[in-house]
Amino acid sequence: MTAASAALAPADPGTPELVVLLTEDGVPCGTAPKSQVHHTATPLHLAFSCWVLDGTGRTLLTRRADTKRTWPGVWTNSFCGHPGPGEEPVEAVHRRAGDELGTAVGAVAPVLPTFRYRARMADGTVENEVCPVFTATLSAELAPNPDEVGAWRWVHLDELRAEVAADPSPFSPWMLLQLEQLPAALA
Image 1: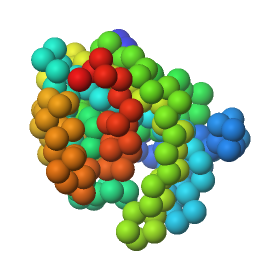
Image 2: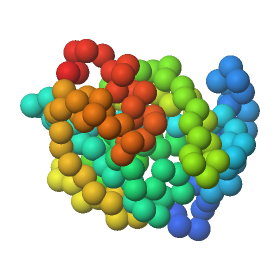
Image 3: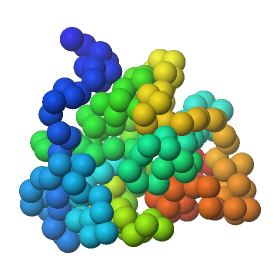
């Protein structure tokens, strides 16, 4: 199996996805099933975000599926996920590109390696993550998983910034924070 086909292979549906729990200093201190981590007292855990860019200055935005546990139906950066125990974040980026977008990515590069955030949904559910941010490019056509992605579109970063300035409510809180911090060189 090649690295690209391994990245596109589905996870074993009988195995619960584990997230890596962290101390306040960002040190791994255990694991927990993803299905049990997100609630009103979500522990700090490891995640990642990825912004897929093309050669014309556009980024791929996705609208989270309406069935997602956290922030269903909101627009966000290209995709996100949680590295599993012992999995490097870059490996998780490749794996989740297949899981969410049905494609492979290349040129994966860290842009905000120490990004961390905490956000609360209207129902009280909390996201609490150390979440390195990466950029990547597509290596194949998109075939998004409808359980993950409700819609997608390409937008220039300057246009996205204007949309956010006009009305930030359709967007995920982590995307808004990341967009503020993305290096100017990406614009």
